[in-house]
Image (cartoon, rainbow, N blue to C red; front, side, top):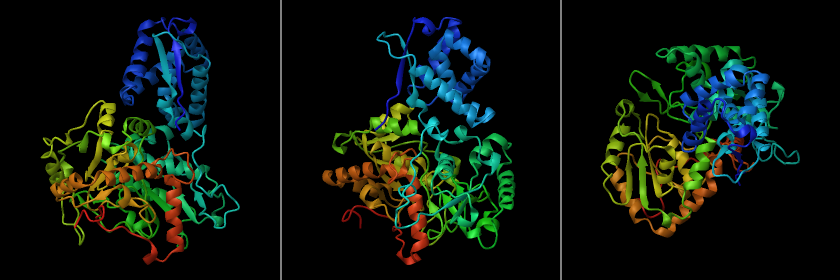
Length: 513
């Protein structure tokens, strides 16, 4: 159950009057109350608040003076500035600033006045978990020394600035790089002795590192150099242990063009199992991922987004207005150009699939169209749909799949080469459908003929299994971390032919021939 940390600050009472200078506090309030209420504050707004932090709260004396002038305003500035404080001053300083903002909020209390300033700590709920102020769930048996079977143990490398900063990088799909790294650092499955390790985890927040440190236009070449440098720096990456090393790729581009020459025999954690390697021909590599060696991991969904999706998802499919929906980009240069070749794939392109979806926009039981803003309106719409179409984008895997779990919207995957996580033990056909991306019309006919009782069963199973995709799950027996450990154990203990792999397509029995 979510803990609702909503704390009110009454305007006009002592330090809450916020009148000196009034224009500054009014603008802070606008950013914190009006913008953040419907969407995560854009980077430009957070940067502006960080500049105010540096001028109003950079020193303890200035901070105390301005807290006396406007407690809620300073609390808002401190909370929104956390990613920049972490980036420029480090995690320890960011943790202390969060604690001070939290204490400030807790000491102020509620007011019945209608003119209160509400500082909502749930908007920043990921920060204390990432900063180590609140625990991430340890996997089920890492905390139980009496368990009959030993869980895998991990040695975690310190790769310095390649795995920093924390808060700036833990967002979007690529946030899985941060979350799995931080879990392993704190988990009892971690070992400090390389001699005791089953696996060696190599953290590199490549997408974030690219945005912070690499000049646009040189990303591919520069990231390749940095990845090679990381590999060459690893103390235990020898001929005997390279197969035990884990490299994590969270983007549809694996950002390591030379990976095959350096880490092909190592274990890969991948959100996108069929990456874009050939950036000249925009061809997906459908042989880069080895399902018996590598691990498909869930993309990261922000904590704020998960909570809002859950709040707006209607619990019964029968109460939802739309049978199916999709809102997103219909046209993109890479939708036309990216493709896959191989025995199982017919070269279908994302653009063709999305054109077929767009033709359904006028259907009365469909909600089809471009992106909906603000985000809360989009979440409201997804929560009113029984089925969410998940077409191929630039990559085969995209965030629409993982969002669907938290909205209770049954995902209909129209992306032939998508490799879903945890298929060795999760009952994917119970809560999802995967159909050929070149025949959207046939898929829609299936959705319209599915019995209501079957739809309700699938939605219930979807809600039950959402915790496997929630990097903030409080259940040690059901989280992405526990899922990864289970897959690793299967790969260690079972021969290849005993590890279950799903068929290319699936649907409820009797409804797809």
